[in-house]
Amino acid sequence: MIGERTMARAGDMLPGVVSMQAARERSLVGLSGASVERIRRLLTRACELRPAAMGEAEPMTILRGRTVATLFFESSTRTRTSFAIAAQRMGASVVDLSSGASSLSKGESMRDTARNIEAMGVHAIVTRAPQAGAAELIHDAVACSVINAGDGRHEHPTQGLLDMATLAEAFGRDREFDFRGLRVAIVGDVVSSRVARSAVAGLTKLGARVTLVGPPHLASKGLACLVEPSAGKPSLLSVEHDIDTVLPEMDAVMMLRIQFERHDGPGLGSAPSNEVKKAGPIASVRAYREHCGLTVERAKLMKPGAVVMHPGPINRGVEMDGPVADGLAGPRSLVLRQVSWGVAVRAAVLAECMGA
Ligand code: NCD
Image (cartoon, rainbow, N blue to C red; front, side, top):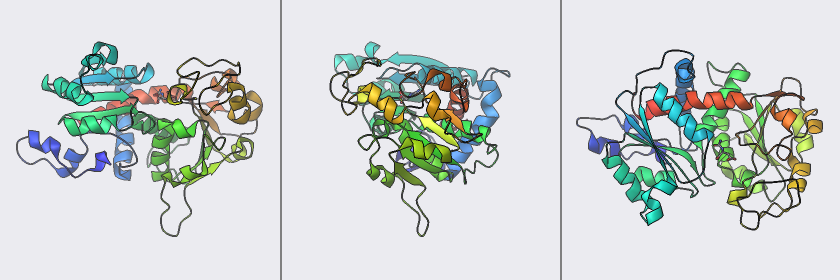
């Protein structure tokens, strides 16, 4: 995993001795290869930077003189904005490059685009692409920091970190970031979800027990191998197909968006409706809601004190009923808290990767 590599490309650029750890951690490509220490350090830093990142305290200058480029080859609203706000409130300048306006549309390779951006003196590239492995490819091509803002179905590490920061706050685990005893369900289109992969990696490293829930074609039993059990201990990851039996056990339920754009077939990329439609392995949006949607009725199955989450954007009435998303029916909703923590977490990641 890239974040943990021993290769010291950053060291090639810098005079003198650069610690191997700093060299390894100039980028954040995924949580599956990140150490527990790094995850805890980033979450602790996010708590420290939160007031400034959220505009509740004076902006900081720790990234003054640095330039961050957002290079998104896939649509995004909150993630790109959140990175930009985080960078600016830490004192960095931000330049936004969307794929339509970049030379990729003229046939340039992703690697060349990244190298050219770096040659202009950019210190960090925040990238999102539909291809799994894109962030790693860019990391290998440049010497500046690379932060993965989502690569296909692979990982979305800052989403995983913000989910953990939100849970830590909600359950009073924000000093030690020790999640032992917490039970979290990740529900829906798991197989296509980079959010789920990053959340599974991060949550289980901190000791939470995670249950993936969905129909067999979206949450196959094989996904349990995402986490290797440590010797003699039961695995912290399991897969279930019946949401109704799982809900009463959980402290937190993370709903996933149906990833229409990552499925083949009719309906690809189109906005969902409650009409029966086909989109690859999802035969019908209505059936999806019936099988694993968090309806107002279902939310009543959750235990007192449990919380609901969603990475956004939400297809209301499909993955989650509107009143559940808004916290107006049943459990407490952390959906907007997740968005707020996103800014603090991204400030922490930018600061750490750029050595600030
Ligand atoms: C996620 C993404 O794009 O991977 N959204 C996000 O970052 N806010 C989840 C999703 O699109 O379903």
